[in-house]
Image (cartoon, rainbow, N blue to C red):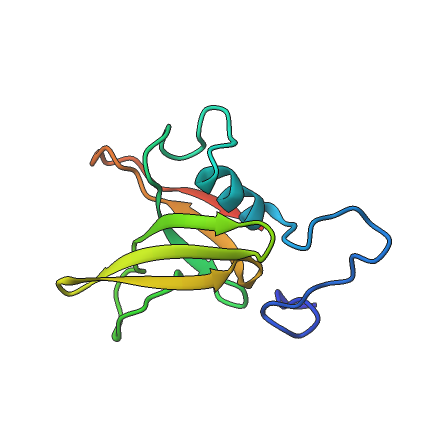
Length: 127
């Protein structure tokens, strides 16, 4: 079985007869906690806007929204809606700030980028 749910990146999965949220899974829950300040001792930033790199389902590499090789794009989490599973991120593209909306169920991992500029390694949360 692959990383895809019901052969679809954003498959709904079968939650009939359960009380699970349609946005279940650790990535969606972490985004909800980070965006809506529900986490005690904020996992990544202790209250600052969180910068992350995203790992899409079906990939072992971080998402790059610019062409070519190199490291993944750094996204700033703007908001998350647990009703629609939509996560809103901003990112820099050249001199412009752009916005991206993605269904959290299409992600299998998040890498938190340290904000202190220190050399500590990013923290990864994989589904």
